[in-house]
Image (tube, rainbow, N blue to C red; front, side):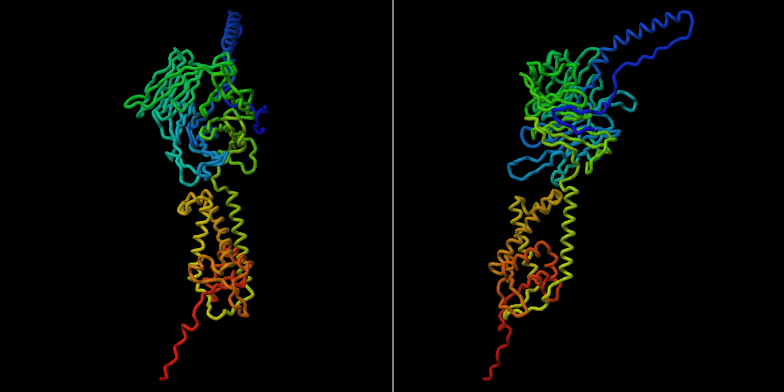
Length: 584
């Protein structure tokens, strides 16, 4: 299968789904009296059936298109989106978490990477409608109860932040929570979720068309007022969720559409207050005809139309009262492609699963054997922001872990070589009044230097020190970044202060310092710039080399030996001499 392209058509495998049409089984009796009449009657009957059913079959040649997705609408800030995707014998409810902001107000990037898709739950039946509000999604499905009677079940699921970066958990943990079922009669038009609660729109096509708007309150569905004249448009109605309620859209055969927008406000002690406003879309008649499987989305205060344009192709257009403008043409989609808005980020998410017999590319994640492809594009310009296989990994990817493992192996190898090799100088002559610093003093100095380096790194990254002890700092990689910056900062500060004063900040607090050390007994001068740079680079990049000073009988680490330096303390040699006896 070809990769999906924009503004182009591409070959596509035959669509999945039910084939419409009528089968006729004609009985042919044997030769008997009246057989000719019977055969002629059956032939006429078959022709009549074909003539009657042909228009119906033609009108349903293309199964109704559905976006199979929902996005939480938000006036400001990031928002969630949800998609329903087929996976073997079930439907997966996939979560599209908020994306990283290009320029967050506080300068700290949060959210998931483009293309991230997480499996939240699974259902045994295909969803017929979805709605989202905040971090919660609502799903309605047409099903049958154990007695074989039709039912319309409703579930809810909530995304819960784990505190570990952009990783999310889902409640209830054992699967979606069942809500009160909707009436099973009629057609499911759509769901809408807002601050006023969950609203469902149904349309009964027979025996008389009737549109019902139901509101869920305390576990029960209640009928709300419907706009005048909407019942006549019941067979064509679509429903989209808006920030204030729900909008019903009825495309006509002339390329325009009528709309009924409901503003739903929560009531004080009773049902919400509903105010309907009638309008029109595309007065220039630029929409597809009413019989086409046309769908709509609401994003950023605007309506986006989704229309088919050939096999496996969708045209996305921005629509208002005056007309429509094409945003993008996406080709190469599967029939089950799902579309949802990320309202807070101003982008549309398109996802679909490739067939099981399609070869996977190296490194692609799968959803029970089916690879999920994704396209994310701007809802304002149609520009593609992401295109490719979805990401199912966490913030710390397998590649990151592999790179970290490689660095650790190299560091351990270098440390092992240096430990085995050691230094050429095993003895040192110290100037009078100096002695090698004891291990406890050196450990305390290193601890002070480490805290200062972490404080500098956390200041640079804008991450408080207390946040570094949380699990999220490790999972998101923030701890790794702070440690990396801390190592560089500690080495730089140590090099600077030891070269200029012979003491790092920690050594100054613990009254010890670094000197050049040679067997000839130099007078304890400060180390050179090269010595300071080398010893601090090795000490901070390979801490085990410095820690060996704690167990070395000579009180000198491999870093000291290799750089020909020593960490010493000063003392008064006359302080320990006994006073001369008084002969008087």
